[in-house]
Image (cartoon, rainbow, N blue to C red; front, side):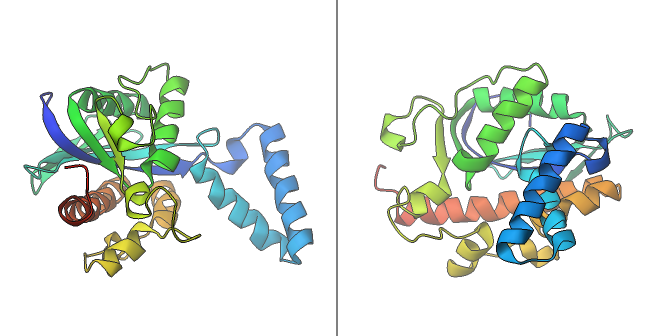
Length: 244
């Protein structure tokens, strides 16, 4: 998005594990050992367990990278997705008021922090547990210092600006409720919101899409995540936000 001031911005990321065979051998050994231990303890198939462990690497910033970062102005519905597309950097198209820009991981992170610095509120889903810690670490790995501290305080009334609203935290009352807190897909279905999975893609498929060079499809999937999160935010803000 253009640099400016934003009241409320929805954000979401997609991540992809680095190719397993390119990892340092010591890291490969650690993953294989962890999978073997799990397979023995759970009496599971060793090969299937190893594949599961490899897939989980996409959630760890030590083994994975940002594939896309999306931002959406909740008031104007204009936004951008900064997606990683090796060999295609610099390409940009606009679809439904959302710019899809192919960048390196470092440039995508830099653009995100420029937007974050100009926000009053940033809204994500499970973003305190996953998105922001991942962004912080990958930024540091790329030699970038985050422009704002989005992990400053978990409780909204104690947060400095910009406020970071994790909808999963808010909808589960900071974990005071059910042991399993639910996915974005589940919360969307509960509120009658179109799920991002309606497009036939889930976050678990991003790795395969990236390997297949389907970078623009990842960006479009990220847009659906942004739109679903925006609608969920609007419901929460209208019906369950008691700090207005």
